[in-house]
Length: 375
Image: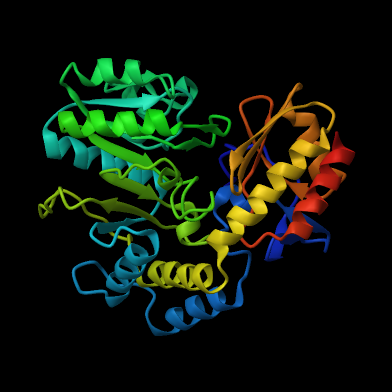
């Protein structure tokens, strides 16, 4: 048997990591400005994270959700306190796609409506409803194209209001900073206006914080920069620092109904231990504040450098897009193969930076030097 070939791969096998650096199986070191697609929040192989997971595996790796798991309750209480949503509830699952899938289902259960509004260039996952709400026809199978979703321009409040006022919209789902969409940012005026319209019409507002959340922008959630308080918040990626995990944060307006939502593996003992270790390190090492400080520094340095082929640098905290006047492929390949530095990409011409939240100013300077050589 062979692997089903779904990804274009760099011919590099990463064998170990520490902080913002990884090493391949030949011992070559790489600077990681991508964090495994925004997953590595506290850094690779953090000793506290390794200890928590190892000790939990030695006690109990898994038991079903038919019994009490005290780690789930600890995580809910701790997360609520740290993110400012201690009056909300937490439903634990396994991935970001599942988080968005369950958020959209819960919204439809709540108000009985069937239509969803999403932003152009949105990416919300690859499962049934989540992929239908993803603005990429190439990954939407015919069985998923059910007509539930209308895509509208980001920040065009009038367009969203017109659709909501038709009365059949169950939910608006929004990335406050679009990741796959090119690090495009919602404005405070748009977000606050949309929130107000949703409240007036009993439409559910979902903030997809899977990539832009968990401290990445310098606040716990990206929407907190915009002055809104959504009904549902979806999280994944950084919550487990590499351990597969997702969550749905649910406002008090929703009443649990047994049987509506469920999961086999979600919130298992190992996953909760990983998530609690992440919160320990984020709090003790002030990583949200570091994301703001180093991210602001990196964005400023990139803009001041006036590098060739760079059209625009945009983003917030450690979610940064570097738009080029050329396709990113050659530059990204040079960064990887010649400069030993990993970045992500968006669209056809934007480099996407999603480094671990423990990145230092020295790492940022190092990256700019490597980027300059690649350009």
